Length: 238
Length: 102
Image 1: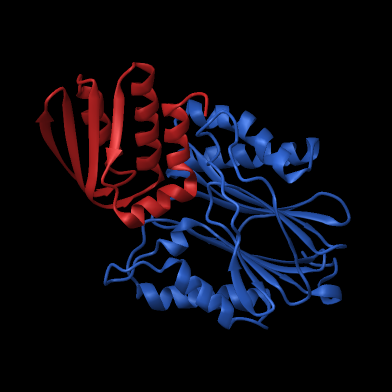
Image 2 (image 1 turned 180 degrees about the vertical axis):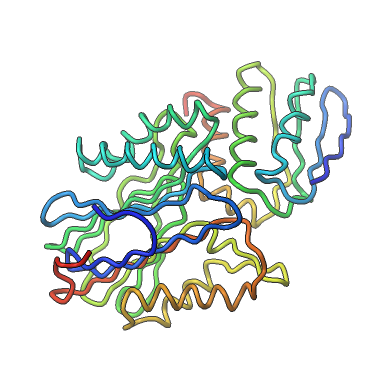
């Protein structure tokens, strides 16, 4: 299991690069990669409501429950349903909620399954074109039953990439009060076709910095890039 | 954030302007909880920013008033904020609360 900040992972035929940049206070953003078996890797990004110690503690609780849910039944939709049941109670007690996007990658078939609970949908760079996953759902903790659009599936080939991000990225403001936005993100992702995962991540952050021109931001920015690297990305990373 | 209170027949309108976030969410929550009218309308036309704390508070107040048989109505949501709320499933929650059989 690989967790934490500023990680580069090479495993399961993937190159993965992720980071989380906190705003003024510690927030509730997180990302995580969880090994399921020899061919299946889960990648998760999430954002727990609020700021400070309270949000950070809730986030740790949700992460712990998430690992347990994957262990009990690794079907992606069941993971999110179960997490909404057990984690939702915890969140509602604190009058909080959490958004989460769960990806499950099968390295043998290249199948990527996506379930979304109220999070910004991932971007996919496939054959040099960017598309936005359509899966939607209600954030964890808002309702007792998870209401989502089910599992959306994609088949990825060598060179294809997936970008996961939190709202702090697309809702970042520049000095002229314009938002960074999903369209600008899509364009910078498209221009990164052919770059490795870490370079893509750095280019997106650099473009964000150019856009915000040092303007102080209200929310954490978390960004994860996963790229199918074929045999070059076989297990052996950190 | 500024809150302007307008009374209308049988209801109250709270006009919220500026930014609703972690730092001031309590202020709006207290204003909502202070009201005794059957219908409380939150007018967000002047809202420029809302964070997850603001969203969570609004939904918990909708739920709370629903249980009391009262209505908290959220209206005139600016387009950008509406898009953010759609991502998290905000309107789906309102729909379920309005119609428990949905």
